[in-house]
Image 1 (cartoon, helix red, strand yellow):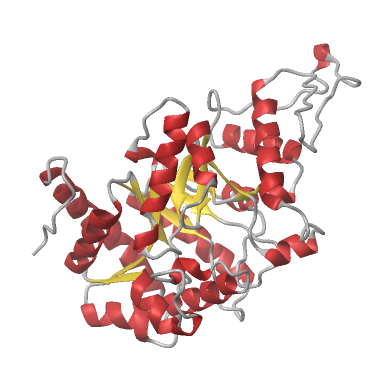
Image 2 (image 1 turned 45 degrees about the horizontal axis):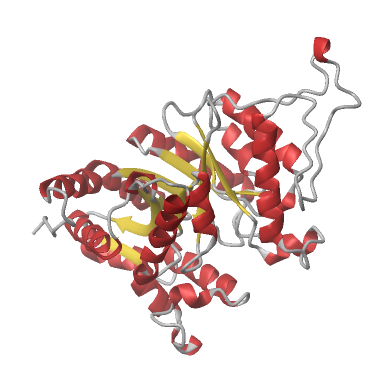
Length: 376
């Protein structure tokens, strides 16, 4: 099982973006040094807590500062830009990164972004589907393109202005052939979108927002999409994000990860609980659909969605989670604000150097069956 990093990121509203952006860069640079496989960085336009407004720009600052980690948009919000822009920017980024690039995509879920762009009444899922179709067509075709897909609002051509001998009217194709890996973040239980991912050989990343019992629904639908395409789903292609804090002391882990009023984990989940409740997407926090909203307190959410403790405890929790959801290929560690930089860095270090080696040893020892708790 690989180890990745997912950063929205979320920072307290009083913090200076000039500081937090550098902190977030340092997080990815540290992940690279520790051997994390990839780093997904989200973007929003209208959220003071989330300081990255364009994941391509942020990630571009990390190409020369990192060596092996793959840099992933997490996600590029396709409803918010014309697909020609995104196709061109993603292809250029892939060349700059010489293939250390993963194209993470989504419609863009933040309603204030949609309102600011005049899209709040639009079907952004439809816009997303239309945009990704056009992006792939641009990468697959040669100029002058003349892309006019049935029912698609985006029409792309350079036929009137194309001059082949000087390269006019030509757009980049990606560095990776035939294209970069495309990853879609999945939030909703039983998401139908993940069926389409399977059909098109996109790979799912199950968000850390869901209680564990909802997560297997993503794999079931992805596998169904693969079956429709005449293929067999490979668990190695499934990423799952979780919120994890590892410390050298259980009391420190419990305090910083859950109980302290200044815990970055409490801040993160308070923000997410409110953000997902407003658009009525908070079923992800519920044990069943009819559960009373009043039960979804900060303590309730933190207790169920933060894995924290010393190395052995975290290893056991991850193995228990894997028993519940099934085999998957990458555990994606959710990055937090660095309220205590020393503790935050130590957690990332322990995750890479202690937790994951033990998790993978336990998986190997299970000889193809669901992993047993192997650390006691």
